[in-house]
Structure formats: C-alpha cells, structure tokens
Image (cartoon, rainbow, N blue to C red; front, side, top):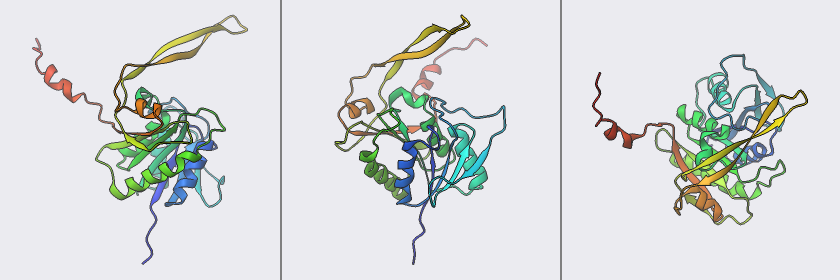
Length: 257
C-alpha cells in the first residue's frame, strides 16, 4: 500500500523570493507535499501583526517547478490565516514550518519576529509548527549546514507530534561545524535600544532604531549559550502568556471595591 505524504505549509517573513525559504522548500519537498504562502515583500519585525484596515491579495505564482506557491500582500500571520481558510479550506496541513530566517530569533527576539509569529499562528490553528532561523543576515547566507537538522526536526515532529499549544523555536549558529541539537530554555535578555536621530533635506528629524543586546542570564541551558557553543538551539514555546506563578501572589491582594 502506498503511503500518503504529509502536507507541509511553508511560510516566512523575509518574502517569497528570499534565499532562506528556497532552502526550506527544497528540504520539505523531500518529506512531503509542499504548499507555500509567503509575503510579497520583507516583513521582518512584524511580530503577530495582522491586516485589518485594507484588503489582502493572494496570488498564485510559479517560482519553483512543481511547488504550489502563493504570494500574499499581508503579514506572515496573514499568510497562515489565508492558507488555512482559503487554500486548505479548513483541512489543516500536517506541519507548518517558517523560515529559514536571515538572522537569529533567539531569546527576547521571539516576541518581535514575523518568522516565529507565523509559526505561532500555525500552532494556534492546532498545526504542529516550527520556526527556523540562522545567525546570518546576509542575503547570500549559506544555509547548507542547517538542512539535515531542519529535515530531522520536521520528521521528529511529524512522527511524535508536539504537546498541545506548543511549537518549536529553532536557531542555527553561523558555522559549518554545528555540534548537534540542544533542547533549551529562552535566555533572559533584552535590547537596550537607542534611536539615531538624523535630519532629512527638509530639515525634519527622523530616526533609525539601533541597540545593544543585553544578556542577563549566565545559564548553560539557554538558547544563547547553545548558539555561542555552536549547537542548534531548540526552545519549546507557547502562546499562553499567562504568568501562572504570579496568580498566587495576586490572590493575596485585598481589593477595596
């Protein structure tokens, strides 16, 4: 009896023509039937934004032979929502993978990432989901050393599933000598942000966001540690943002209303 290949939704935030998504499409095509829905332009840093004030466009395109692909005018999350509602028509794919992103989405970056928000939206739709990122912002980044890990993690998720309301945040160091995979927690870090003020030809000020990544965590079980020691970091994340440990504390308050 011939086995049925899994259906895999591929999304990203760098845009449908980005090198990273090409590598992800090729890797997933070796595992199952691939359907791509990706933004028509870069959407980095969009987080979980959705489009509500203007119409969305979804156009079928022919970029890679034999691959069903759609270009979306919206955000990465819009891409997943449209895929589920208009392309799959409620029949969920077996896996959603996002990336491979140009640049890390470790630690606090997961909150800002369009790549990870697309994967989060997949998980919200009860689709096993993974976001992949590489520590290289160059458009000519070499993703070849990531491919075997991308495939292995996808196969593991397809075979074993994931806990409810959970997805994986996977980051790769920029090295050809990845030592292996580390299951990690998200490091405690933040961006110390600054705004570089400049003046345009009309004498009006404008600003470029800059900043320094501040690590406040010396643990050897974090994604930052793993990447610094040339491991691929795998962090299970959830979209339930309840601070459960704070509930007992809040219940000690005496409300005067």
